Image (cartoon, each protein chain N blue to C red):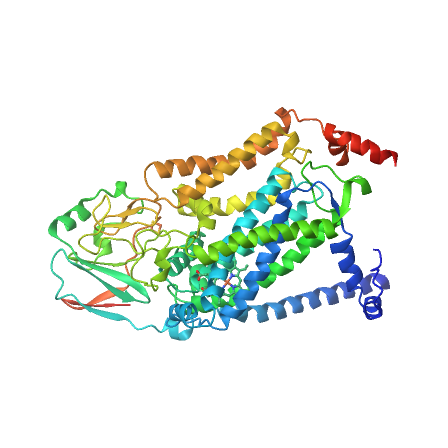
Length: 416
Length: 175
Ligand code: HEM
Ligand code: FES
């Protein structure tokens, strides 16, 4: 680990005793990063920033929120109408959850496309899937807090999933509820956990970064950096690129917060929870729709639950399902095609999750669910046997240097 | 020899230390887990009495019990007939209609879909009642018959019949 080069004597005094500056310099300044990263590599930092935004807005919302069935809905309305800037804070938090998932889903599909889950980044990938699971739990419990109709019925349906567990299912559900239906004890514990889980996510994110920095970032052509000529220091090259990405992201985010704050929400959640009446059409938040479609595609209760959790479970073992040693799709023509089919399949599942479970939608959900599992469990292990991959470049620098427009410039540089 | 004895003693000490540690940790964790189960006041929820006098044939009411809706329906002759006639082989969760009622005129059910807990439609006159004329859960499409038995859709079992008894001809107590 190279020393922090600061001339400041106070910094040096501290760094000698607590090498925090050396650490930061190493990980965020000189950290060697492949020089060919494209904009898909912005989404990791965007996810981290969004997490921080969620925690900050969440903490201030908690100062005005009341976790009690008789007051929760009104306290959120009070935040919207009376608390100074309350509407802004809530809309940032509410839309932030959606944007968090947009960013993380892109981040995950980036990993799928460029084979970032392959050796030696398996643990990095698994930590990512764990973060996704915790995010889902956090968002689910957060959505219950405003205690609207969707909050209540979403909580009812999702907690009831556990009743599918043989023998002890009912006891588990009663335990989750702290009663015989979703009620005040449920709301209280959800608030407590909704406050806690994001901090556990922070812990996992730190581990995720430790694992990342062990071997450094993957890159669009998926071959390892072979030396200094293949990398550039993180600062200023990627700090500035991440900042640029952030400004674009923040613009879109702000547009949603200020102009379409309820676009991704459901109007029924502005109706106070009513335990006696289920809304005609209950749908989860958009980011759960593909999983919801899988749940409903299976005609058996336990089966549906198993397949839904299975859809995430396959991601954990993905590094061992995909037997191809080639990381990037750029050199895997058939995988690339199937990757895009998978993207389409997931979007289709999302669409179907929002539709009523009847007629053609049920059939389509089954086909799309089948395809999802086919992709991971059958296609990926078998594909390397039939796929003719394209030749890999010798190094990250090679395709850049050998492309005609750059070759002369490169040759000139080489001579110097 | 002495060495071996010593080793056995050591194993015993190590194992019993682990065992005590595990019991200690377990007895601390259990209260942390069990506090999430229903508290005494939640368990002590009162029962609900319902007067069936105003309920005309073909009408239904929904009452709240333990935070959940309970469906009470005064069934018509045809509904009773069709519920009793049903061949048990056609049922996913076979149960005779007689075993689901105390007085065949009144069917009393917990109005919570056994799939994932939505409240089925069918209590109001205008409601969709599903293909078997009883109740229909719009969440994932479960159809129940006049006896509240599951006929079609993802729900695994029939609508639950709560514990209730007739205090008089027209008065029941649920719970
Ligand atoms: C992973 C990060 C987080 C996610 C994905 C998330 C998600 C959500 C969602 C979806 C809602 C419902 C918004 C609505 O429809 O009104 C919500 C509400 C809430 N969250 Fe979070 N949250 C996160 C972090 C936090 C943290 C760290 C806190 C507290 C320190 C917090 C406190 C609250 C409060 C008090 C509410 C209720 C007020 C409201 O509904 O706007 N959240 N959260
Ligand atoms: S909750 Fe009734 S069908 Fe799913």
